[in-house]
Amino acid sequence: MSDKNLKRVAYYPGCALEGTGHAYDRSTRALGKKLGLELVDVKDWNCCGAMEVKNIDPKIQTYLSSRVMSIASEDMGFDTVMAPCNGCYHNLKKAEYDLENDPENVAVTERLSKKAGHDAYKPGSIETIHALDWIKRSIGEDGIKERVKNSLKGIKVANYYGCMYTRPRHIFPEKDQGPGSESTLKPHFMDDLLQAAGAEIVDYPLKTACCGGAHTLSDSDTSTKLVTNLLEAADECGADVIATECPTCHSGLEMHQIRAETRFGKKTNSKIVYFTQLLGLALGLSARKVGIHENVSDSLKYFKEKGVA
Amino acid sequence: MTPFETILNGIESASAHENAVIGAIAMLGWGERILENWNGARGEKPTKSKREGFRLLALHRQGAKGDPSFNACRETCRELVYHHNLILDEPTHVASLERLRMAKMVAKHLCLFVQGKIEEDRLGDFCCSSRPVRTHTRKEDR
Image 1 (tube, one colour):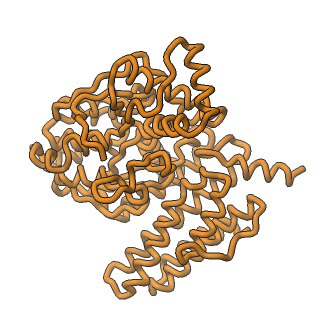
Image 2 (image 1 turned 60 degrees about the vertical axis):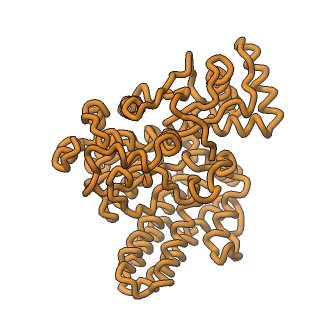
Image 3 (image 1 turned 90 degrees about the horizontal axis):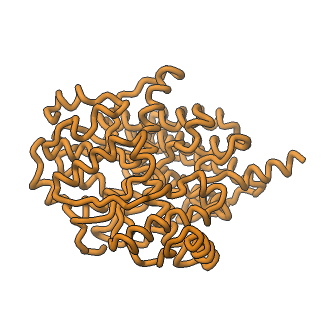
C-alpha cells in the first residue's frame, strides 16, 4: 500500500453522483472538508463507460475511462484520482489494466484520443482509489477515533460492498496483500472505519453479493428478489442499518425495499445509508449536511433516537 | 435440470432442520444443484471433481470458464462453503442454527442470481453478461 499524500486528490464523481446518488456526493464532499482533505474535480469529465458501453464494446469503455485519467494526470498534474462510485472505480482500474496488458486496447485508445484532440493516457501515470481507500489511507481508524463527536455506539451496521469493488481480482493488484490491504473475499475497509466511529458491525454474509442493479428497469422482479434477500439477511443478522459505498447498489436497495413491500408484501426494516453519511454524522456533521434527507430510505428519526442527528 | 422452485424449497427445508450439521450438508448439496443447472445450460456436463475439497467450488470454476462474469457469484459460493465449515467444525456451538439460517440466505442468493442469469435471455445482459448461455440456447432452439 502506497503511503503517498492523499490530502489533495483529483475527484471523479461520475454520473450517478449527480443524480440518484447525490447524497453520496454531498456527504463525500462534506466529509472531506471536515477531515481537511481537498477534492479537486476532474475538469470536463465524461462517463466512465459503465455497463452500457462496456456491453457493446469494451474498448470504447477503456478509452472513455482513460480520458478521465488522462485529464487528471496530464492536464491537472495529479497522481491520484478518487472515484467513490463502484462502477467508475472498477472501470478506471479496468482501463488501467487493459492499457498495460492489451495492445489492441492501446491502439484503440490512441486512435480515439488523437481524434478527440488530447494526449492518450499513459498507463501508470495515476492511481485510481475508492472513497474507502481515501479515508482509510489518509485518516485511518485512529484518525477517525480521535475526531468522533457523536459515537455510532448502539447502531448495528451491515456493510454492503456490492460486486464491483473487488471483482475481478486481477484489476486490483493492491488488494489481498496481507495485513493492511483490502480483501477481495471479505472486504473490511468500511467495517474498520465505521467500527472506529463506534458502530457495532454485524457479520453480514452477503457483503459482495449481486444486487441485480443492471436489471432494475428491464426485469424489476429479479432485482427485487435479489435485494429482498440482501435486506432479509441484514435483518436476520440483527442490523439496523445497511451501509453502502456504491450509488447503484444504494438506490437499488432503497427502491426495491419499497417495491418488495408493495408488490410481494415483504417488509424489511434496515435503513440504507452511505458510509460517508454515517462517518459524517459521527464526526458531528448535521444530517442535512450529509444529505440524510435526500435518501429514499427514511432514517432521520432513527438517527435522532440514537442521538447522532 | 432441477427446477429452481424445487431448489428454493429444498433450501428452506434444509434451513429448518433441527440438526444444523445435516442441514448444512443438505444446503451445500442444493448449492451444487444450482451450479449444475448453470453448467447444464451452457451445454456442459457438470463436473464431479472437487476444488479445495468442495464440488461446489469446482462447479463454480467450471461455470466461470470462458465467462468471467460468473465470478460475480464466486464469493457467494465460498461464503456458502464457509458457513458449511463453521457448522461442521463446531456442531454444538450455540450459534449453529443461526449459522444455518445465514447459510440459507447465501444459498438463496446464489439461486436467485443463477436463475436470473439463465432466465434473462431475451432481456439483454444480466449484470455483466449471460451471452454465452443465450447463444447456446438459441442454437438449441434452431
